Image (cartoon, rainbow, N blue to C red; front, side, top):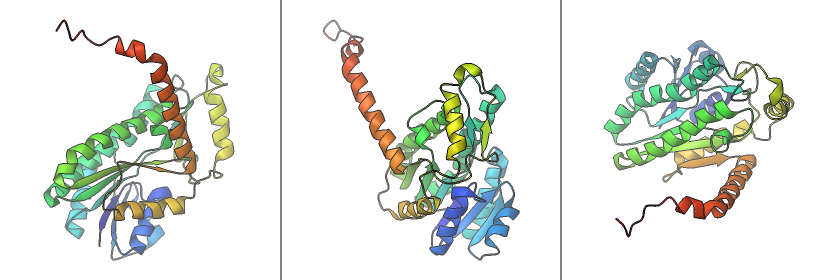
Length: 278
């Protein structure tokens, strides 16, 4: 039996993965700002511990991890799932909006990870799974600030994987595309005040988000099952893109980067030092 620690477990991906883990016979420490919402969804369960956690509060993160260890003795899988979106051009986003989304998506993830890792290091085992996004691999209009938080998650996970590998701990960053969750609803997404000059860029994204809401191509239930397959893998990947839309965008970005490198190779190499003179 594995012990999962899942943030943002009251709805969306977090709730679905919690249900899949329990169905598989695992135990779950399911956290949310209001743990009663978890109990209301899943009822009382001997392998479920609902814990209050606002990830932006470091002391709450430590207390939640302490409660998990007291109840189950260890944490095998940390799923950093809590987060929310910010839709708007980079200039449209206010300082407060930017700070808030980074506080949850980046600093909150770090708070929880720092609280869990001492226990995984003591065990010499564990798997840290960080939920990123397609927007964490390729930026696009209207999602610049949100994407920046997920770019940060990508970089942190890549470093973590290298740092933790000698300790027997794995790290994976998951990159979902567009899935039919409530992410585009008001409770999961802040929308910046529009500036007319961005109507042809972030404005188009804003309009398409409204049309796309609950009509996204990805199936959240299948993503939840994919998370169990990831946790079962003996050699999990550093990155796991989910959804054909994600695969297409990643492959397209690789082609674009390769083309730019080819076009600008000589200028790039021209900045090397003169090894002969050295």
